[in-house]
Image 1: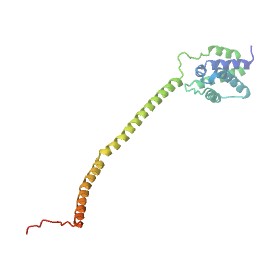
Image 2 (image 1 turned 90 degrees about the vertical axis):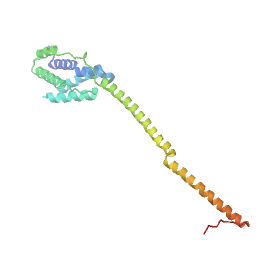
Image 3 (image 1 turned 135 degrees about the horizontal axis):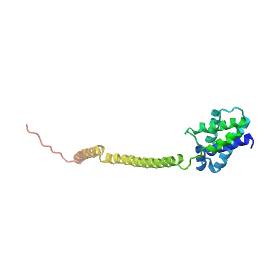
Image 4 (image 1 turned 180 degrees about the horizontal axis):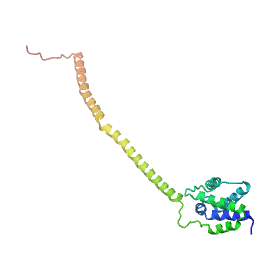
Length: 205
């Protein structure tokens, strides 16, 4: 039979291979072009961590896995599976330390497979919806700007034909007769200066 740590390493790999969240991230390339290699490295990192540290608590492993999942795949497991994965790995490690490798092998055979057929990455559709919403918002903003421009032009045109313009016309009209009277008075004064006699009609007593 293989060494206990070799069986434990196989157990870690089997648990991670059946973890739907991780395999979904790999399938959709959330870790970039090296997503598959990162998933394999994740299993090795977990095994190495157990070899270098004693009495690892499931909650500590849960935090460790969550950090790798977030840093390497930009993914958060919010379906409750993270704690289950941590419990399975810690359980296999304890069995290996107790020399119960056969039980570990039996557990590996019973591990569930990753359910990828009915899963859809949530980031794709949401991103498309965000893009569509962004385009609609831009169109609405353009319409609002066009309305604002029309509103700015309309008052300026109205001012030219409004009360102020009418008042200016009235002032011009009022000025014209005054100017004519002054011209007549000036002309009369010029006639007097030239020797003409100005005759005015007397009022009746």
